[in-house]
Image (tube, rainbow, N blue to C red):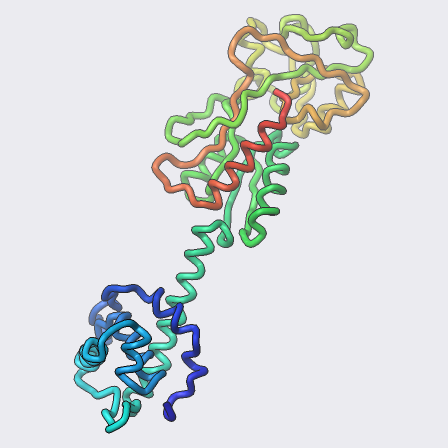
Length: 335
């Protein structure tokens, strides 16, 4: 076809045309600018005829009859006010001035639909898009980093971002749509009923004591054995923290030092300034000059750890893949 370089349309049209929808998916009808209601099928046929300069050849490529192709072109011309898009010549057809004006716009529509198809395919296959993950602090000690490493090895094209926070704030992030998935715990009795919870592990507790502490050689302890100890905690009040479990055992722990970071808490313990509770998720990073004593508790586990999403919200394939990575990482945590 002399009037239109094939490189503008290219051989991509074969695959692209198939992605342009088999039925009449139209551009929205007339608005303030009197935009015509055009079917992408018409544009697809128009581009094939323009490419080959023949209704017959275009029909062969599309698997349609010549008359079917002619009807589609006629419908497009009618929608555009009856302006002919092709000159019907004795041998084939040639774009009219109106056809040449329409061609780049039709190519742009085809290109955008191709791009949309590729992007949706990437999302469906977990090969692209983004994933926003939240986690509470101790989950970031081993569980979440391992899951991220495994996920990125399998899905390098996905942009993964991570946010750290307390469980209530993470749940708020899910509700607001700022997070796709959050690793949360039952610590603090946060309301979890509104969320879809996928269980990862039940986490045991350890008491960290200085290496020379009188209880350091014991195989395990019960919390009431440390009722008179100075405690190091992330809050001056036990409510909503790991020390909440002490209240269930009938004593209120004396918080001598408020320290937020796990590594700093260990430093205070090593210096003989008190004892602290360390969950299983953080147990692997304990320094050698303190001792960890498993807590014997006949009641429920200290806390359950979940991957949470908003109930009723569709879980994306990338989130499903990250959930699988979390479960694999959780299986490696000594609980």
